[in-house]
Length: 282
Image (cartoon, rainbow, N blue to C red; front, side, top):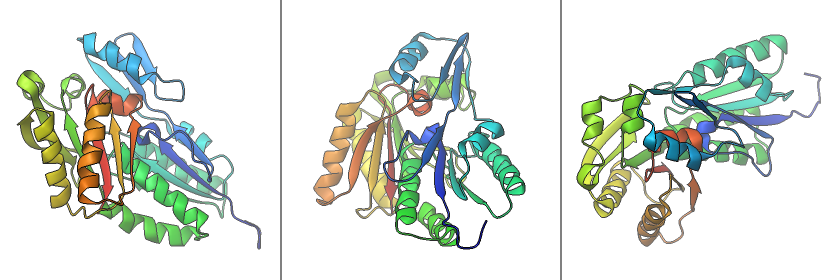
């Protein structure tokens, strides 16, 4: 890097972040892929989450997800001097490992350039929070090292809570037993839980009905230390549930920074129809 040269920054994230673009900082979404029988759904800007959700409701065979290759990550870096990669939990995917291999190759090929990979140990809206924080730090004029020093403790304060109406795809993907999956969704049963510290699915409660699921989510958020920090809600075909959760949280903290988004393909696959994912700051 030439002395006095203005450093260029870029943020990349795999598509589990549900982020396609940023308004103020260069950004690239690196797609994962969902495979079910002869069908393949690439989680890029053309991915149709609604079509994929409909297909998976009728599909009875095994399904799987495929992480981006290290080459896909490498291409996403462009020619930026400073790159920040935000990845789906290494507890569920090889995306983080592929990003780290790409980072090593990029820095070896371009001495002086820097890449930092954030293994979120999470998915969906928690990744969105990390991406938004990186954008904020870059726009504030922080150096690469300053951003690294701030983003890691920030990530420790971000959390993910979920409420799922079905575990069919987790079972088809071999993530949970079919016996456990069969108990969810029947008689209005919802499973509510969090992303564990190890980056795995951690069910905390089984409740009946949407109202009790909402109450349990708020309870878990408080137990994890939420006191009014930013909230990002993602849903798969459940805008009513997302709106009800937003209203419940805003009743606790009036001036809440909160937003609702529709899940894209990867998060729709795991959340399934009716699923809610909540990323928040503690």
